[in-house]
Length: 155
Image (cartoon, rainbow, N blue to C red; front, side, top):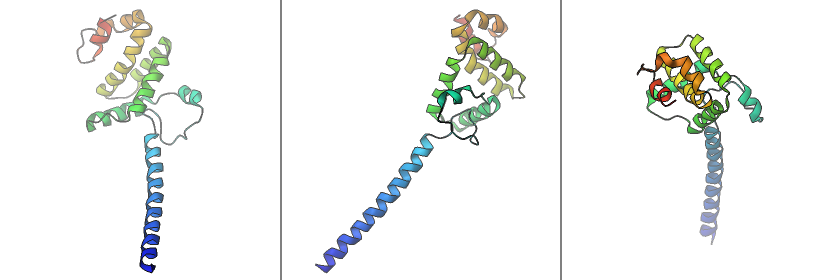
């Protein structure tokens, strides 16, 4: 009886330790899955108000670096963050998109990074104002490097 009760007590302590470790791991995984979104600085505290977060300017240079890292790593990165970014771009007006394209053009970025960012913005711009997109980028229709050909040619 003494051996059985000792064995059961030891088992309960082990189970308790495992449950505690499991809870810590769950918290860690939850914090990783809700981590910093692409385009957001890790130094900024997460705001509970989503509307105010969407109004913060996008750090295009940081975003370009993150996308290049994902591309070099061969991974997809944080899918949720990419979806949030895409939704944010879709919510922008044509004027906002043009202003963002002008901001990107003014940045000191490698050509590959600049083209990647421009490609992300040209799709929503084509949907919102195809005439503006064609007028602004008609000279790039034949440029196969920029990836604009398929987006602009359908307009």
